Length: 336
Image (cartoon, rainbow, N blue to C red; front, side):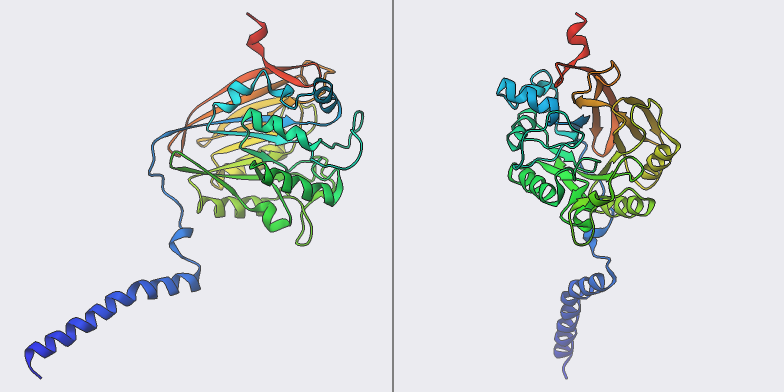
């Protein structure tokens, strides 16, 4: 064989090996579960992103009555929409399921929001809500499924609940300015969560707050997004200090890779803690609620979190006071 022929054969063989490498690497990744899309993401954008978060939003009972009386589902948000909608991502804990059956609820601990009240959430610019709370299952399995479908139809993202446990624990990814934010939501069984409200492999419900769920889900979310934000429904109602259990779960979330923890359920404000570069709002208090019995239950926070790329650069809060059983207003609006 001539030297020229040998050189040609060697060149062809080398080309075949090079062309086959991506296929071999791809096959190996699929078998071992190490495909590139599951590596932890690196932030390439340094653009600013502002997230606004509020606490409990309940559109049933006396709030619902005031909405019906005024004939305007936007009514609870008229004094705060300008602050909420200017954010890149706006979040709340949605404390009342939507359902289109049954009569209006005016004096109950079982909640049901009229489907049209979702227009208020859209008007205020809410991008994502947590459903992991002790009222999500108040209208049974049908109400849970209706709520999930209703939010989907109205293009509002949700976290912390789903048609089964896998879906309830799945991170919801929202991208803004080149940065991907993963939202996770959990309800603590020790904070009034009925067992029937917890998602299983066969029925809808909320994601349960456990150490294993928290660690596994945050680690998975870190491979799909640059920033992980965890919503937790926990603690003791009307207590202004977080419990040891809250602190344990909050620190575990940050240790596992979360940058921000958003707490709710106590219906009063609890402290903000900076921990290892992460920020923990133990309770943002009420935002849209009808608990007018005290100044503490009428008071809530709007949290504004400023990101540069994937890092929190600044955190600020705006205090709101609830008026007329339904409408939060910035506190300083009445101090001038």
